[in-house]
Image (cartoon, rainbow, N blue to C red):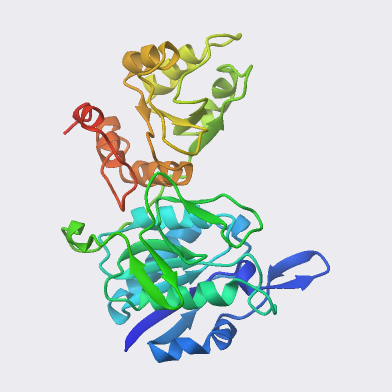
Length: 342
């Protein structure tokens, strides 16, 4: 029988009602009392490193979770992290970079309703997650939610209240879970070509800037001293407007001359960026060799930038690390891949 470590971090799944609204209250061990069926297929130990609304979870917590899994890695067959939904996609993506080549499953799950309510998605999500973490075919970091198994780098919360809150963006589900049966769509353990690797550093000085009509480079000028890199959410397939008191062109030059990275992403959820299409993108990309996120989620783009910049400040090494495929996070065409440094 498989041995699984349940890591509770708070979130809606473990919340109760207070006069100020929902807040984490249910102890880690108490969660298991609502899913006694797990005893049929696994043994579970529990740890609770912290108990937070996921709004309050950020980089140091991701490093702490990765360190806990590293410490316990040899003792368990799989891991399940109970987590709030609001930043769950960020946590799953971050763990995909902090823990690479894991042949053991690391599952992140949660719920839209607390587990102790009569009607809730929490019990199904937790039981599905324990089941998936006990399956010999499962590996790597994935979100299990609403019957879907989503690669940790491809998940996005698209609905704020519905039980089917998460979608897999620009990539198929890894599997689905129906009536206790796991149906795999992608079995790719052969892609793991080395031992599990744990990383311990992130650089959180990353700015995610969403363009709005009328914005110019003034905002980059004002934020220059506070960040080591910026990811700009552009309109459509990507490009910069050419207006305003301080043009984006001069500010991008300033950031890059200072050794800071500038990357283009898109505000559009599906299909990704392609700065080569329009003049507003192509000219500035060619001038600066600007990086772009292509079909990655914003959550994966941000956390991968934090991870890569935590390993190096050399621009070319950073570029190589960022464009190295990790847990299905980026699909590059032949032309795009040929432009990257070897």
